[in-house]
Image (cartoon, rainbow, N blue to C red):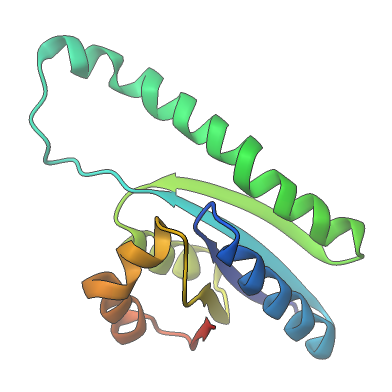
Length: 145
């Protein structure tokens, strides 16, 4: 049976620590798949004009493509080049809720995120989102310093 680890990236250098920790953990476990996840914060409750709504889908697809090519694909490539089994996922949504959804969909066994950041993910998760992630996840959450 394959063990799955979800790695939450923030698009900054601090995410590298989570990747390194998850890779070492995967090597110790053996048969392991690493899921590199980047969440683009997005609220369905923002007020928009009809013109903005018409462009919304296109913008979301562009954001996903950009995040995949700039953040996720380089991390996945580094992992696979070193012999690890890895793939990437980019989604829009609330950071904690989206990571938990991915964990449930993928039947993942653990979540790995970094503790400090130059901005972005940590600022978003080390408030109520971190609490939500740690308190709501059905799997262990490892916060890497």
